[in-house]
Image (cartoon, rainbow, N blue to C red; front, side):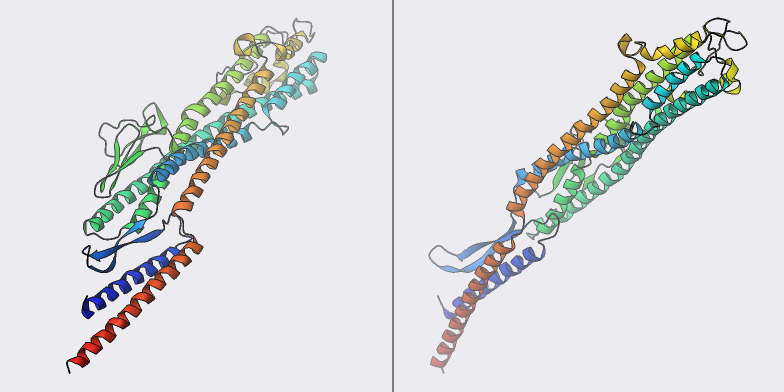
Length: 456
């Protein structure tokens, strides 16, 4: 090897180890950067087998496990799904909090007790006023509970629209990064930092909805919904949108923004926060409202039927006690009763005996609900218990998914995360290589000086 060749070899060694030290410094300074994947230089000797000409950096590679990244995204689907449902169920549980004196169970007991009190003194104005007050309170809590359930539905619907906007932001970012990464890769450049940003965008999207993604030959990532419909292909996007549901103008359907057919994608999205809020809106709250409506409608029907068999203070047959209704949101005491409490048909006969009030009070023990197997109170207790069980199930599910995801993230950090100790060791190693190349440079310089002196 000539002195000039030796100098070039030393120069290449200096440049390679300088690059390695710079890369190590970048790793260290990004130790707290979310989603950062540590990078390492891949050294390669240059020259022929029998005549090496130094060292260079062949490439800078990200240290990561592709399969682990897929697993984390899959678990993000589950965590997002459970988070959305748990949050909504917590709000629903508050609606039916029976620890206060204004819960349905407590007010239902007061309602039955007021009929029993009236049966003992059927002509008493105080008892009649108390019954109307208890009945109005009961009807009011049914209406407010129904309204609050509908509010949870509306909140879920608003969340759906907001999540679509967030998803489109991630979709746009992924496509934009695809284009930049492909351009850099074509020019043989280093796109590792952009790939990290894209991985974070994929992770963000994974919390919203479930998808599959495949990496193309140009390092682009193509993203598809579970039914194979594309969201991203290269730098092209298929953004999502919302369209008013023709069957319910208060709610949105998920569609592709530019799809003229406006195919509904509600059932295509099965995981992530979007699926969670869709289930809350279209399934959970619908079922809870149906159960609440059944309870209210049955109370109205049973009380009205018995009330119409009795006699009021004017010895007239009773009318309806509650306004006829089939929904909890419409439960109200009859205007005739609120305007004149003497129209409460407390008597079983025209003798002001209080027998009909006693019969209405006894309805509390009648097996009316669930096909004649449950009383009103036991049905409501089961209803509240179901909400509590649904919430407990989601809490357990969220804890389970979160624990697994954290384990996967910790495993990823063990592979891809920055270890300051390890980087300092690498830095010392690269510095040693740099110093060795510098000494080789001095040797080459001395050889050249010697040769020049010989020819003078």
